[in-house]
Structures are given as structure tokens and as C-alpha cells.
Image 1 (cartoon, rainbow, N blue to C red):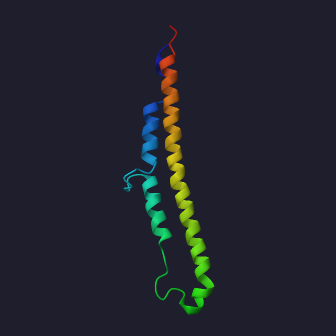
Image 2: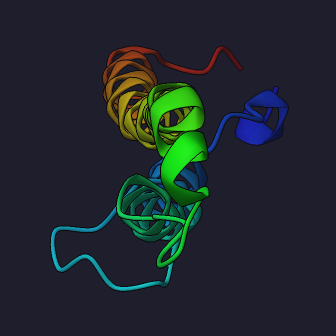
Image 3: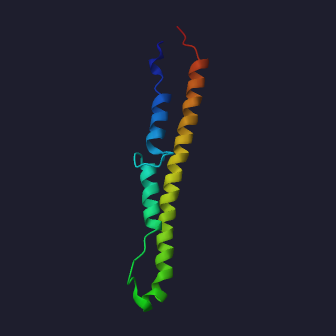
Length: 107
């Protein structure tokens, strides 16, 4: 039997993780980088002047801040999850490599 039955590709798993996770440089090359950038934008968003007005400031500022921070937290958690996927894909690639190294094909 040939080794063609092995379908898992450790290299492909590592490339997939790297293509999704946020980079150390923090550019905009991966979905993780884009989640980071949008999270920062959302977290810093304000209605600006005159905003909600004097009465609206008292009534709506707290709700606006809570909604904004909640949305930013969801984006942060999504970015963090992509980083965890990279770690898990890297670990899976190591397991597959180790299994391939220790297995022998029967003829």
C-alpha cells in the first residue's frame, strides 16, 4: 500500500493557522489583524459634538458606551479565537508529523 492514503497535510494546517491569526506586526494581512483594527476603531468611536445633546448625554451616553464596548469585546474575542485556532492547528500538525515519522507502510 502506498502512502497516498494519508490526507492530512501538516504544512497546510500551519499555513491555514498563519493565514487566519493576527500577526505580531499588526498589519491588515489576516482576518485576525482586521478584527484587531476594527476593534480599536469601534472602541474609540464617539458620537462627536454635539453628540446626543445635553439631555441625550445624560440619557444615552451610558447605553452608547455599553453597546460600543460590547461590540468591541466581541471583535476582540473573535481575534483571540483566531489566535487559538492557529495554536491548535500548529499542535495538530506536530501530532500528524510525529505519527507519520513513527509509522511504517506495510507492503
